[in-house]
Amino acid sequence: MEAQFTLFPIDTEFETPAEQTTSDGVELVSFRDLVPEIDDTGYLTHAIYAYPAKFIPQIVRYAINTYTKEMDWIVDPFAGSGTVGVEAYLCKRNAVLFDLNLLLNHIMPLKVYNGKKPLPEAELFKRLTAMRESNHRFTPDWSNVGYWYAPEILEVLSDYWGFIHNTDDDVSASIIKAALLKASKRFSNTEDRTPKLARSKRKLSAIAELLEENWRAQLDEMVDNLSLKTLRSLNDFVIYRQQHHNDQTPEIQWQGGVDSSYITVPRECDALITSPPYLQAQEYIRSTKMELFWLGHTEEAVRELSRLEIPYRKADRIVETETLDKVREMLTRDDLQKRLDSYFCHTVNALENAMDQLKPNAAACIFVGNPRIDGITVELWRILAEYFTERGWTFEKVYEDRIKTRKLFGARKNKNPDGMKSEFLLILRKKVICQTAAPRRESLLQDVEALAPDPKTSPDSDAS
Ligand SMILES: C[S@@+](CC[C@H](N)C(=O)[O-])C[C@H]1O[C@@H](n2cnc3c(N)ncnc32)[C@H](O)[C@@H]1O
View 1 (cartoon, helix red, strand yellow):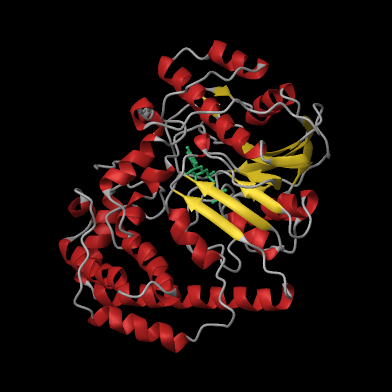
View 2 (view 1 turned 180 degrees about the vertical axis):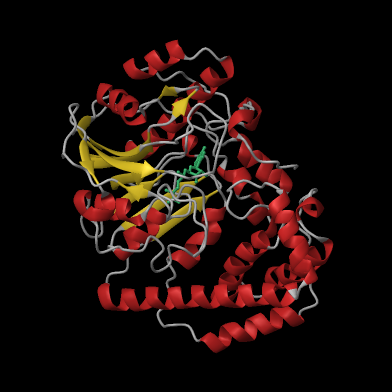
């Protein structure tokens, strides 16, 4: 199975809750148990792309079933790899998705493939053959590309990507693109199982061994297999739609490459379902830059996006709540104070932008962890609940999903060696009249001050 950096990784064990409600009113649940109809987090088109900290579809499905009805509009300002979009589509809901990461624009056309008929395999294999015979070449705009590849592998990948950038941009090309992205990572010098780029002795010796073997045939086999797997997922998706959707086709809209801290959601929605970025160093753009470069985005564009990423930028206002103020008092390190301020400023801005466009009585379903910063637990759900209830939202409930063991990014030398123990789904309800957010000015790049990631939480050896 492909390595997926999900909020609930495959090797996680779950505790079945003993009692149902904790003393402060948190309802203990297991979303996997609550949604038994989904027994594979990668079902249909969910696993076509790897993405750091993906939602498991069960959480989204539960929120959709409980808080929306057919043909409602759902908004997700931190859409990532579009899990909310796929689940919305399958459940006959419309959705509007935003994310800073440009990958969303490449991911969504495949994940919510709108073709009417299953795709023939022969067509795909014809394209794969054409790719191997093509004379085009594509060199990514990435000054350090040579650090990440053996020269002979880079040459072949540049040829394959040359074909992709010069062929019709149809569904077969998109299928091959998705396969090539995974293969370009697997055949690079970076570790496959860490989200960020990281050269390791293990991977370098694996590549050296590969170069002694018939690596080209192995690369081709991987691209063929992944392409075929994706084609079959799309065909299953088409069949699912034929069986379930009758004449109603949901509409899924997306915009990757946008800063949700400053967006205007173009329509009224019936619910928000989202999972904001991690407070700890996740760096989604840096983790996916290899993919972005191969897809044709420039080093400059990727750098600019990274500077807008939460929480590595300057706060333009200070969010205050009782619990957050207590955390601030305990934090002694200036850089972590800044990160905390940045995190809450821009996460709350983005949530507010989306929540302002919710209809009265709509639910906002916000999925967060309980991260620790310098050993101090930051109860995200409580802070968000405090912030929004002060502004007229009703706190409806919070679900807690407990995780027994967690091996998300391997051993890390920080003050939180066990990782998070629980994840929370906070439900807020919009009152008929809610205080609206102050209009925010557009983000200007010159206002953005990148905050250096904490070296303790950035274990990679990313040289670019
Ligand atoms: C926890 S991930 C969301 C994953 C998503 N739920 C999924 O299933 O794939 C958080 C997302 O926030 C995005 N993000 C970070 N800063 C952002 C910003 N300023 N504007 C919009 N999105 C941002 C990251 O790119 C990342 O995709």
